[in-house]
Image 1 (cartoon, one colour):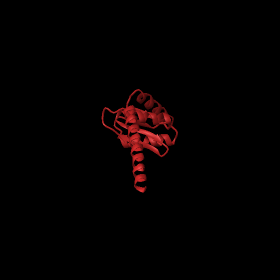
Image 2 (spheres, one colour):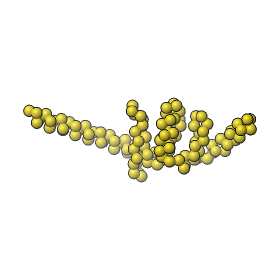
Image 3 (cartoon, rainbow, N blue to C red):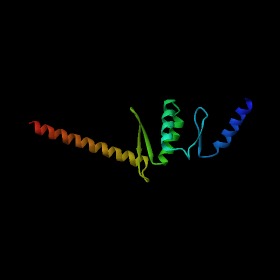
Image 4 (cartoon, rainbow, N blue to C red):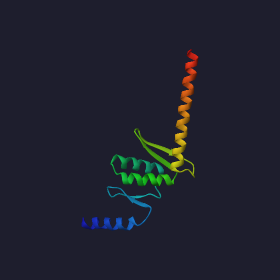
Length: 118
């Protein structure tokens, strides 16, 4: 048994130096280079549920590099798949513009309905 534990620690020490490997709070090693986006999203969600916010942030940053942007809301994760060249800040700006446009449209629609009822 001691041999297994020491081997695990040696393995962790060797892998920590490699950029493509990350460790969860439970000590599970993950190869982030070959991982699929949906796997990262699932693991990020589980990390947040387990209050492992450091690992959750690591996955968010890795997803950002793949132009998949995750935002935490009251209803859970909101995921945006964007084109290359998009940044998190540009996406937030785009979302805010869309929300403003939606509010203006709703106000216009309300005024039209009110006119028709008069």
